[in-house]
Amino acid sequence: MANVQRIKIPRMPDRSVVECFRKLGEKYGVSSISVSALAFSQIGNVDLEKKDNEEFLTLLKHDSTLIESCSLRIAGLSVSYHRGGQYPPEQKSPVFDEILLNWNAQQGDLSNTDKLDIVALINTELKAFEPGRFIETGLSEEQNQLLSIHEGTLERLERLNEDLIRQSSQFRENIEKRFEEKTAELEQQTNEKKEKLDQEQEKRNEALEKREKALEDKLRSIDDRDNTHVRREIRDRMLEDVKVRIEQFGVSKSTEGKRNPVLIGIVLMIFVISAMLAYTVLEISQLNEMVIKKDNGSVPSVYWLWSKFTFLSVGLLGTILYYVKWQNRETQLDMHIPGP
Image (cartoon, rainbow, N blue to C red; front, side, top):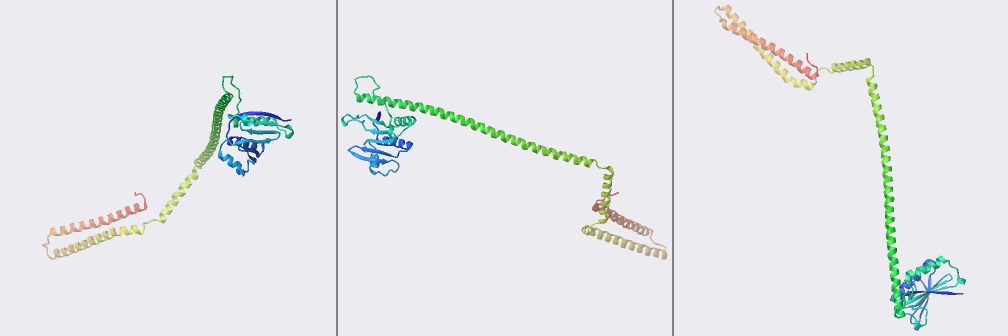
């Protein structure tokens, strides 16, 4: 036994009708629909997945209202579209079209959930409306139908607005929830990093304390050494230093080379003074011989020669002593030994 129900929809373009049937086919695994167009054009079965029917593609290319009817079957439910309604040509509506639902349980079972989903999809995609929602106002039937379509459109816009508001609110809640989750995650990561850094710092402090304690123990062990051992060590160092100084006693060749000009000058001075002394002694000896031979020698000349001899002797002695003292001082400076 077959049952038929009608869903009235506004006049729809071909593309909208085909798109609605395509979505139904994709959802319930139906790939072909039967299509007939105006001017007695029987296109027949069309595979929506292959898109190789040139007549069907030509129909869609015109983007008009050329489809007369089309249908598909989902189990025992037949869904068919009729331009102007399923009526004789003279009774077809210029305002609305119809979707016919034909149920035959013998051709296949379908759950109530699937049936409701199919009707809801048709109502949404093809903007179904309820005719005759207005009281009699003296308008024609077509005008009442147009008002019904208009009212249905307003209701859809209101539902769309409500959906947008609900989606916006849900989106905002999701954003806030994600923000809170992200904030909590970042706080947790920050706390974990802080805890890890604190642990590392604590380990470093412990290592530093151990090193400080080891250093203190070492200093304490050094301070606690036996005084005898310290004195013995100091004495050994002094003896070693004296030994080294004795082995390295004297000055370097370069230092001796720097002193050679002074030595040469002193030697020349001593030689000159000695020569002058010798000459003075010779003069004194000759003068004495002259005095002995002649008793009228000049006394002042004798005094002058002895004064000259004494001055030269003092100069010679002073030169020798100065050189000895200078040599001793330079040696002490080179050897870094403090003087007496």
